[in-house]
Image 1 (tube, rainbow, N blue to C red):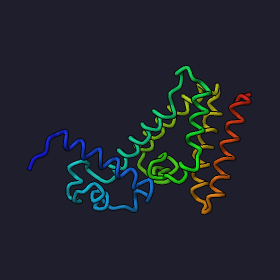
Image 2 (image 1 turned 180 degrees about the vertical axis):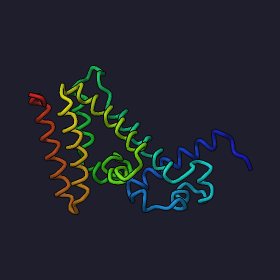
Image 3 (image 1 turned 45 degrees about the horizontal axis):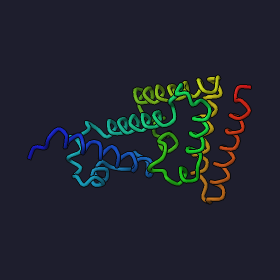
Length: 190
């Protein structure tokens, strides 16, 4: 039975969504194609109708996640300036984000796997990160401060997720958020 092009695209999008959540929660390398397909109700053999390889799926997941992050976090020049950046920090640095790995940012969840990926994928990630950094630099007036803030955000999430107790997770996230918000209030590059 042949499926329409729209059905194939809908299935591909479901696979991307489901696989992205699984990859962020369990790690991409540790999950097989059969398990990824089973999550969307299909057999492993159907995978190759949508992606030529598991690595191609990983690249598509990373690109999709980074596009979403850039849309949420990187709209510089929208007239909202530091208030927008403050809202981004308030949403990103939360205990809910620490605990919602599947629905959260891909960088802290998949960063180690991305670091081991091939150069073209790392180049795609670099371009996305540079875009986000430049948007934040525009708001902050400093390219260095933008990198430092991005690093602090991702690092805080990674550290918090590494700890067992909610108390320690909360301390890491709240301390990082308070530090960054103070820096924003004081004028980051001053």
